[in-house]
Amino acid sequence: MPVDGTGAYDPQNVFARILRGELPCRKVYEDEYALAFHDIAPKAPIHVLVIPKGAYISFADFSAQASEAEIAGFIRAVGKVARDLGLEAPGYRLVSNTGIEGGQEVPHFHVHLFGGRPLGAMLPG
Ligand code: AMP
Image (cartoon, rainbow, N blue to C red; front, side, top):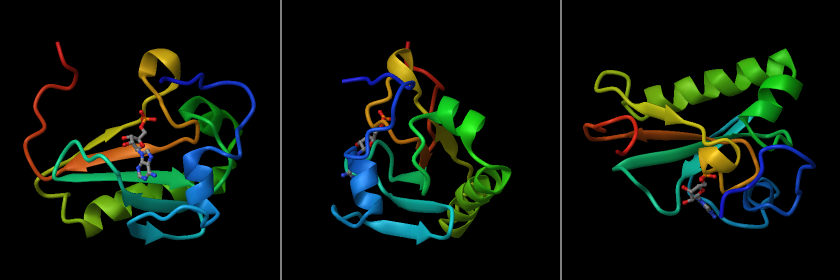
């Protein structure tokens, strides 16, 4: 069920619980600013989620409210994860679903990193 990308942050969302260690994840990378882990329902041979450590609901929230250090740290982490997974040469796709029409389901900002095969059209239809 898509969620609103605005409003108050829900500290019980699944990614907040993963960040607190209350739920497991298949971790790929972690630093001061970001955590990366395999998506539980992968849509490509490589499907990793990268999330900031801070409590941001959506890209809209993160881009407006996060500090420059958080934004820089997060973007560098996404690039590092893609590089470390060997995706730079073949290429990859980043997606961040935001809000109702974006189809966002988890209300903690995240970037999907897809790779491992030709990814086809940008959007269905
Ligand atoms: P979005 O629709 O952009 O909010 O995507 C949420 C993603 O989170 C989906 O691809 C889910 O498969 C994934 N997901 C939900 N719960 C978990 C979990 N516990 N561990 C890993 N991925 C999850």
